[in-house]
Image (cartoon, rainbow over all chains, first blue to last red; front, side, top):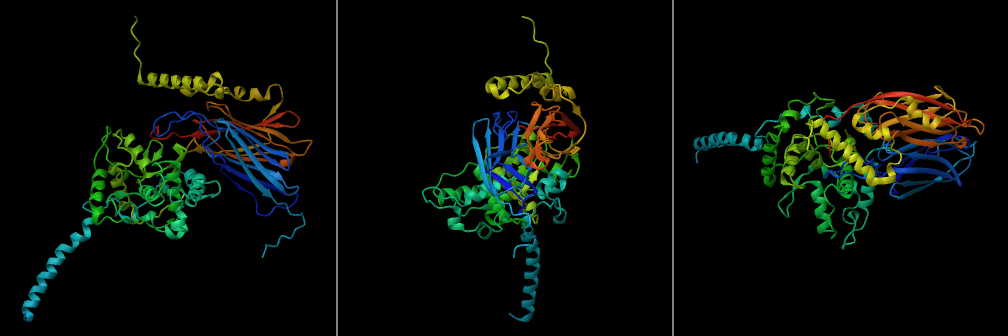
Length: 116
Length: 271
Length: 169
């Protein structure tokens, strides 16, 4: 339950509104489908997913069975200062998934020349 | 021998060879290729824009992302009494496994059986890693097969149907043309004769195997070719063979021969 | 004992669906707390909810306007298991005026609320992407709650095609 992928823009300047892409590995079993042996797969979906940045919750999603398996969440953040993005999610079986990713925010007047 | 006799012998020899050789060359197809090689099309060609987009547009949010990540992890994970990982013997997957997926199923020299890639990995895990093999269709089996496939991305399928594989090929071919199930349909009737036409909302494909294991949207999961074949059997109301049954392997060999030249697609998405 | 009325195949399958749903409701207890009475019958009979039924639980007595929300889903979804959904709500996203919550509501799914998002001025904008499940052709409602307590919304009809071979794995 702890596998997830995150994508951020390569360069984030202070003041930018940037996109955060998160892909969580989770079957999001709705409870309505059957497996290859014809047994009903019990419901198990992520109930809550939060993103915390520097101790502040900056995004929350509360999905239900209506969100597709291996859910993709894309949202935006205003870049204020560097820190650590901490994602946490809980599902019906009380499994907890986590992902930490550093957030580097460059000063607003940083050179836009490509790094050599 | 004088020149005259030499020429006489040579004439008959060449004629004789000329009669035999075409047969040797054509053991490959007792039946002609129903779909000529230049008309082969991957299942992607019959898929909707949405499915094409899901396969081609964005690597980050790929539906097989989990399988790909997990496969890479498993490749590097030490296992069993050997305490070796796949990487311990095989190094980088892109080097050591290049072209492997494109050439399976193949005869296993040790047992003489026809192995598909999943069988080969199971055997390697048991024999060389001294670890319990992953069950067919398990998450691990699907993930590691997907990972090995990445080394053959874009490479054309080419399987060997000579020698010990020949009887398997013949059996698979026969199965392909045999009517089965309560609906009394053979594979060829839909996938050679009716591909491109609609069955309710779905466009019938040629039934090509070049993307497996695929992410199947209907199952919300990765799926092997065997699982897909079993689903087809269920759809025509035929009795399902046991997992790993030689019929499935024979059919896979025939399908891969039929798909000669189609590139391995990884990761692949289908409806 | 009165003889059993003749049961058609459709009726039998319907009963099976209802029975298995009933069992799964009992078995899973609180996890189905969100299922309203409509949905148990909804799965078998495919009755669509009205717009009011969909939004009333959230909007209640606040104002509701059809503006400022840009909802984008494919008009024709090949597969209901995975339908990309893009949402852009117009808002300055300041402390004084921002989107506080977004609700994605389904007309036909067993569970009406597909996802709820909580946002704030720190997000910079109210642009969200996700992938939803749609059990059949229906209307999708994107409802946004603003920081002043009022609501704005947008709807879109999506046609979802069914698989040719109805599958149980």
